[in-house]
Image (cartoon, rainbow, N blue to C red; front, side, top):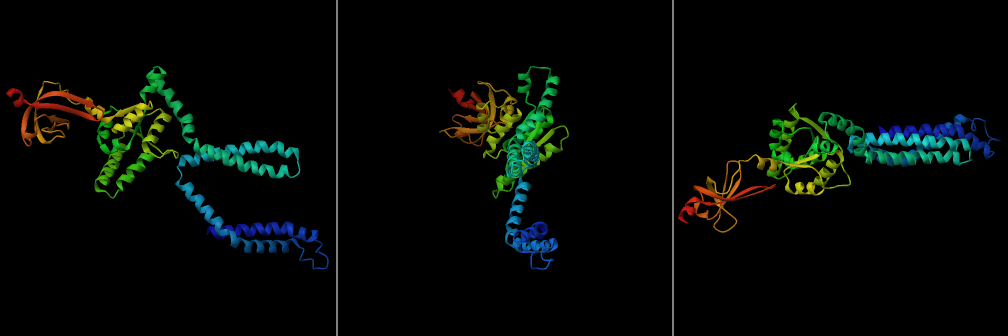
Length: 368
């Protein structure tokens, strides 16, 4: 259908050009004398022009159709924000080109006044279209965030740096969504502000859910279920960020860039991403830090009852776990594997990656 429409367009164009110019060409070449008058008629020129263009169209209509389909695919696959802000930039460029054209036309320079404006329209239109699509995130921040920031300042009645530190946008990464605990945390109300789910995180989550590995596929599907659970909770304000950073390949780097652009806070339980955010001055909330903070405090010298499950990495060590999942390394505990014993805590090591407790059997302490 598209091919036929393009051919029809060229036939109409050829007929129009033939109607106007073929009689002039015949008169210019002095071919009108000695031939019937209908040959030099404009309607004859229209028929000849339409027929000639119809024949020529068979040679270049296919490349034009392929070009239009390729352009259509690129527009369909592009984020809607790119298309919208690119169109705004295009309109802005055409307005500037029109203003530049006015003095050129008034100068009435032969050749330049008619041809140069065409190139100005094409050049400025393309230039501002690219600028609009590439600067979409900054334009969104320019028109969207300041008003909300002002409302936020009025509500908090605090200093600007305090408002900035509050971080009303919480950006979720893939690891914290798959973990699942974030849904319960959101329901408790401890995580205020707007939850931002970037589109590139959603794509990574979908890619994991479509993996051929069973374990990864199950984790990805659980992450999608968690997102649906969060979105259906009306007490949680969820916003899907559809923008992307084409110049950045890694999802973690995109998260850091997005957090800087919108002054947001990255919510994660990825230890490495946590360190990268801290290094680049981006606010980060680590779910593991929160879990460690609400765990019961255990001090050296206290006694616990623990079941030794397996051997440790070092010689003669045994490993057990508390009810909250905290690992306990029991010195000289290899002989108690499969048994529940009383232990005395010797030290506690707590990091963003988790908490580890070192202990020794109470029976061994009594023997000493």
